[in-house]
Length: 124
View 1 (tube, rainbow, N blue to C red):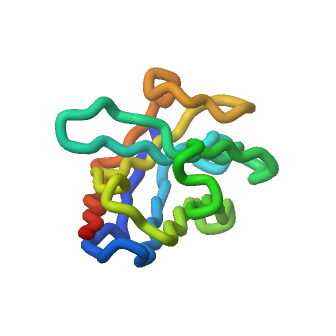
View 2: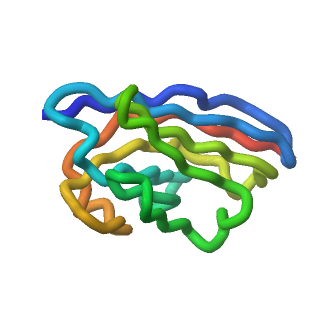
């Protein structure tokens, strides 16, 4: 079992920044690919960004490339999402997830463990 807990959400104006954190605990969380997903009101949960366990492989949703940066610190069992130049379209609940994979899956069904989510609201 792996437990995930997100933090760092909040409300910002367009153009602002937020940094999300995901703390992992339990059984060897450092061996998992970690991903960030988001779900806006009335929308499907969508892939935002993911990072393979060594940190050497990442994948980003096109709409966040150049604005968002994922990183991980396996010594702290933590994953971070730095979000810059936020847009109202980024408003959603952001979820941290863990997958047993050597790549970076983009589909929610491929992730085994999920956090409870943290709300990000961007106003125009």
